[in-house]
Length: 273
View: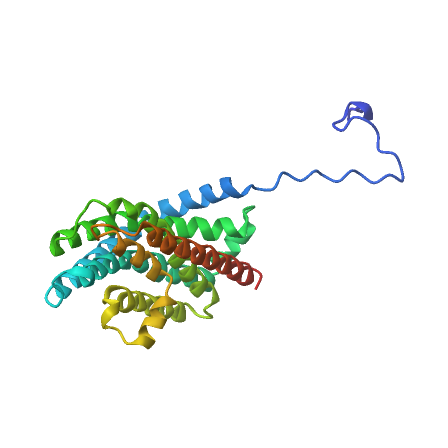
């Protein structure tokens, strides 16, 4: 057996009796934006194959609703409401309904434990998943809007407003869907709540508000997607009131920030249980 001097061992000097070894230095905490981008890419890759068929279902559903409404709505403000509501309904189907189901199943299967072990902020998990699901709505929403404009004879000039409507309405509905899925005690209840939310977006967003009772109009004002529908519908007129359009988008964005904050709180609450 060979004897090696202590001063050449890793660590250099001899340990002095009575002195505690220095604590290992921890790595830097994960930053918000890199973590958000990583979760977004992972969710987008995971859901790409599974969610594309459902996106076709959401698009065909909205197109079918517009074809049915064509028999009772000729044009004017009612046609604008139908087209705008049907386009935003695609966002509601994916961002609200499917996200509620996803987080409900993730909580029931213990998948939140996996995310809890990752060095990423809770907000990055919620925002990354919400952004990935909302991204799937872009093609379907555009196709629905173009088809609706052709069906009802509406102008296509201001469809660029979808660049703002899709992310803002998607953030509001995705935050609501994530919160419903994380707060529901069972995945079946999360699925039910997601379906009810999408049904509310269908009935209160697609149907022209002029034909609704006053009590239903008040309920419509509480739905986050309503303001995205209103902002989109106002752009079909010959002289859009852009101040009101921006006001609706601002309300939609504010609701989105609030709903995502609630979803982040619900994630932290569910992750520690």
